[in-house]
Image (tube, one colour):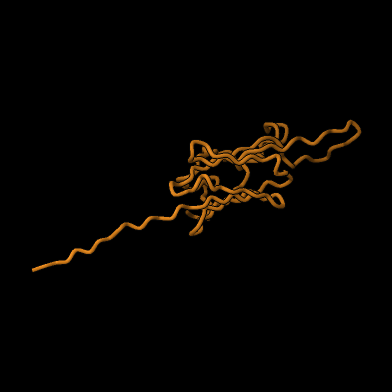
Length: 150
């Protein structure tokens, strides 16, 4: 997998991702035109594979672990979701700029067959969610030597 984004919105060919490519994802819309707090919809996630596990890290600044859900669907799809609530407005406040986003988000990843779904662990520290999916050991085939005669 390439770590260099392509010219087409950073789209990379990822056989495990279930997200649909959105060609307008990286365009900035004026706040009057954007849907309510849509920027938080695509939480950024890094996925690396070690010899022992698949490790996913998601940047979720400002969220508490109680506001995030990690689920496994159909024993093959990892789903990370949550919601950041809109800050309460006070009638006496004057807002000069609103750039921090809020709203719901969801990311889904199809995990490979060697993932141990019953041993998935998740932790959250300083706004970074870490999900560790251990890998099953690859069984080496039994090899039997045959003596050549003649």
